[in-house]
Image 1 (cartoon, rainbow over the protein chains, first blue to last red):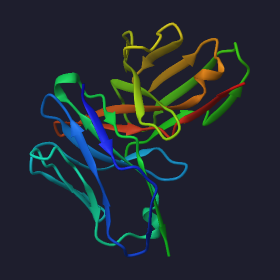
Image 2: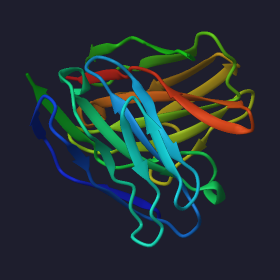
Image 3: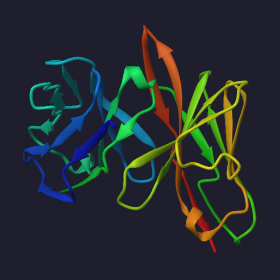
Length: 113
Length: 117
């Protein structure tokens, strides 16, 4: 079945460092790909998404490119801030299976000043 | 943006009792709501899909008599954990789906942490 694998955390960075969180997926169809973020004490929020190959999703300085050839959707940010500390979830939605989301395990990012 | 609330945010109960968790879309109507369960350091696992006015669709391995879902209105879905046991202790998260500009987006609640003693 469909699945999402993302890098184990926690990821600990200094402010202004470059961030990459790897995410790869397995799907039988042509899924839409998402990154969600969960700040402490809050619900999941959609960070960005891409619905087809080579699409780039971007938001708040984060970006990820849908790479069909490598089945990847890595999250990047050029300069992280302390306020970016949160748990990041990669997810996919397979239109053939309805709109339910399949999530990775989540990666905790901790940014220090 | 769209807001989804859950109540309670956390609950502790004795084994054998039932617990009801509410999920509300506060400023929009959602025809579909989803219930997820998250174990520590694990993925969110979909438990069931709930459509307003109809029976919920449960994922394989989820006991429908154990986890009762009611979606009586376009803004409220409830999950009742019946005869709760310690293994039901978990973090339960709901989401509400809304369609706009031809795209469907899920908005998530903050989650409910359940501890069964």
